[in-house]
Image: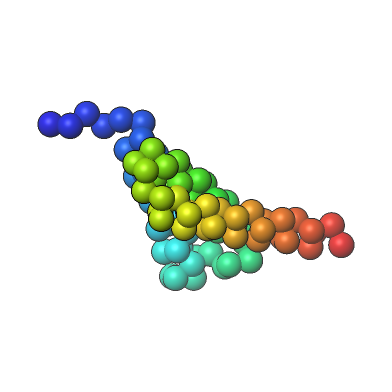
Length: 84
């Protein structure tokens, strides 16, 4: 039996957060404007990017870094709206 390492934990936890965010959005428990949605995507994509980097899965790294940047941008936009 394989030992579960920190990279596996990162991968599974990251996948959980991204899928949870999408699932909650799909069943209308979250709205895309809510910071919680973007925080879950940010955390999940960061973990998945690290996971993919450790596996040298470069295409997955790129997708998850872009996903991470989108989440950061959305959180920044939400924060700026509260400052007006």
